[in-house]
Length: 101
Image (cartoon, rainbow, N blue to C red):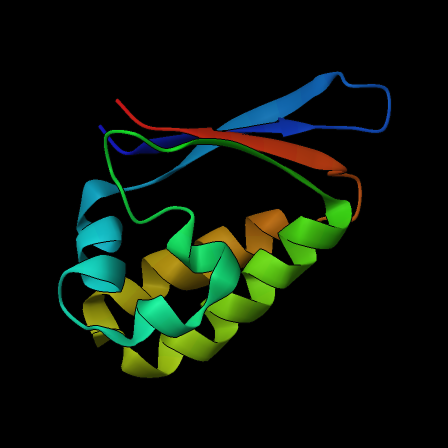
């Protein structure tokens, strides 16, 4: 199980669910130390205690953090990261809730 991400629209209706796969989380937070420099990415570092909601502006900031850290991610995990960034980039998504196990 990964970090679950629930996607909401402007009316707070659920648009869908995606996740940060455990392997991707490991690639972001255990295989390098660069994540500590990114404010929004840091909020997702604890796999079990993460429970956070982001509005659209914060989602955009998270996407920016993910774009930067992609330089330090293995090619295997880069595909997962690109898929996540693409999903979060949908402008219909106005809020997300991210929770760990």
